[in-house]
Length: 316
Image (cartoon, rainbow, N blue to C red; front, side):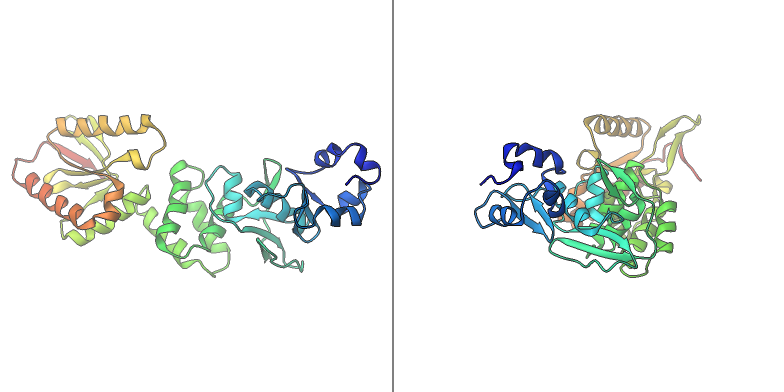
């Protein structure tokens, strides 16, 4: 169905697109008539109209990248990605089909299809990621967190970014205080937890189980040294009165086998120093919490039954 000059070089249209997505106005510049666009976007045709004024040069399911490109084309030159779509451009996993965009408060663009348009008086300076305009990472993260429906997903989202070192609690708290209060309760609760020196989602869940166990005070991520002041380890949990360490197995949470190897070596150093160590896999915190609590009590009793080794926590 080639009409006009563009039919002699159909690849020119794809070259003018971004990831196979193009504005109708750009097609008109390439002398593709409205009737040609309409014909190719009919049911079963080779193209599809995925947003008003935006065409995808294919008839399959648009990829997350194509949805993001289309959302920015639809929303205008001063729009930028935020939320989970922006997080995907920063290298984080995203499972949301919607594309959240920030637009200036004076604009009248509305949410259409998979586009969630948020008008804001606090339009940040965008960062370009793989050619797409994105809100800075702290803003993108918190915009995504505000849309979470439970504490678990909110924790997972925020803790992953903090654990990678891509944003600090201070940065996120500052951004949260500057923004709207709408949807901020869960992100605020998670930041309070993370600020209590808890480094990952499993450690946060572990703290909740410890509270239910009725055991004495537990320190989290506390540096432990021997009688000579030599560093031993920083266990996830530590009951100082009996030198009892709780170690959340890193294989399910950290990023590589190297991290897991370090976990095993750390655990061995603690055991060599006479410390009673309870290893727990993160999944057990959620699937079998009562057994984990029982394990905590039994290992604490074991630690009480032997002389305390000459080790100490370095208090901050």
